[in-house]
Image 1 (cartoon, rainbow, N blue to C red):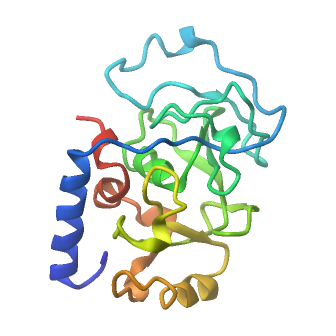
Image 2: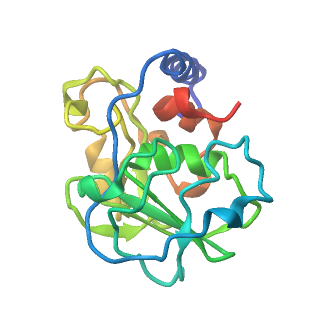
Length: 208
């Protein structure tokens, strides 16, 4: 678990390392028509071409979520967010760039390794089992780590954190996840996401 228990931390680090050596499952992002304008590829010519997450950005006003489109690709796994209404999410940068993700696990990986200096100013994530976008910066995420659990059978990209709009719902979910013991230390905010969380979910897709 992420928190105060060193044994749980070691377990998650081990899971992250194991994930780095495995093949990722098929992933994608969300549904909807219309949306932000695709960014010209030439706009990234001056950026670090070695960073795997500096692609697939589009124009994003940042005031509200844009619709997901067929042309959008997740910058972490390159799948199409339009196809995954149960998990899709998006972030907006201060410079007007937006990115769409098929899953919150991919969002965690991107957030932990931002490819540009422009800060994230807004975001939206699909609430777990609700198919409704909620504020990603205000949401509560339950950090689950056992990708062999039956509860993870329907996850895209093998395993994802569980986003909730309300902390009470996130805490209530702890008892529903029977694959491993969870505590309130496993409920985090987006601002808490770091490399360790990214390794849990997308260890094989992190920048070198």
